[in-house]
Length: 208
Image (cartoon, rainbow, N blue to C red; front, side, top):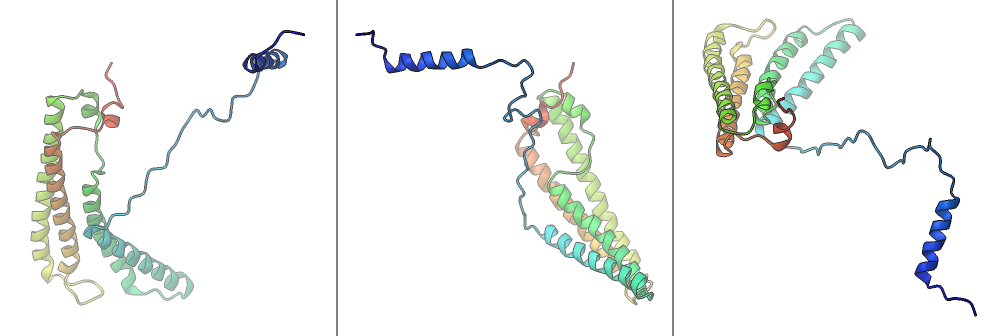
């Protein structure tokens, strides 16, 4: 009667035999599970703030007016005279209303090289606070001058319609005041957090 071999020992022997009999290739292709670049889709969050709805209505109204202008000019060869002017006013209003959306999301174009090179501490917090307050002052000036422009343009009529231009600049002023309100909210939130940055932004650049 021969020697007994346990099941776990037999499994190890069989595994070693398979490994020894498998030919090794130095030019084997990498596994499909290895990725050099990993990209993850950012979660889409639909928000329902007042400036979002106003920008949504202005955008699609502007798209319809521009399409109507194209259709009447190049298809019917009889362009509607008011479409170009209203499209220009709509684009101007959309830019300022959209500015409130961008201010709320803190997505304005900014040069952040200096603050990114700084390490966490009171110096960087003071710099970020200074930037926030300068932006707040700029938004306040925009809101103030928008009121004066609306007052001055009240007697100026539109080119096509017999309506005052203050209606158009009123939407611009509304966008400026919305940006001011959102910037006040941003400053308040950043002040409560001590003007700290998220770790992924803080650590993206390291000083030599």
